[in-house]
Length: 227
Image 1 (cartoon, rainbow, N blue to C red):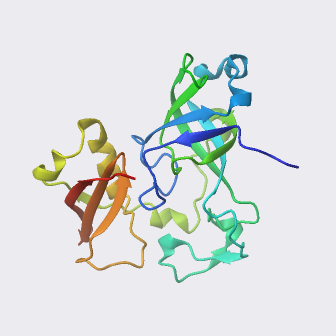
Image 2 (tube, helix red, strand yellow; image 1 turned 180 degrees about the vertical axis):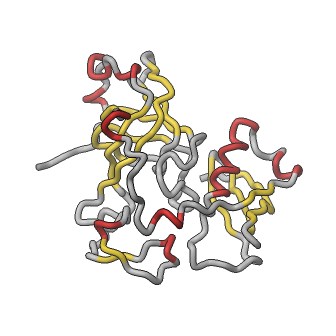
């Protein structure tokens, strides 16, 4: 079966570093799904605005040429423990496909690019190709009693976040909560524990630089990013 992208997503994440590790972890992360020319047909979206959430089927476009392995080293396990690829959400898979659940904010019907889907909570890099869009159904897709395996403990931790006033003023108000949520999830590889090391990630035209010590992420600089 041959598949081709039906859309691409526009997000504030120009690189992989700093992107939420899973969809929904950073609820304020805004994105827009832009359809390819062949699919800019209003009738194809009829009824979609009645749903609060969507599934996006997409491609790990930055790793599609990488060879897959039956076992991988999940970053959240420190990069030292191996797990079966099908027990992880690693991008290094037989088919480099990803699946994300996002909140549908609204459908923009009138635009030069056809219907646009404004969503929140996406964990995709800017320009990622989308292969399909499906409505999320809470009565079949939600399983509160489900077990999260080895991942459960890793996602229960969150960093305290401190953004000094001088740097907070450099962040537009509409992005402040999202930047704090991105930092709280600890964008660093788990095997990096150097409290003196300064990390940085691009977001919405900014370069957010921070340091982590004693489970606290402290912003040390906010620069303009021209990527």
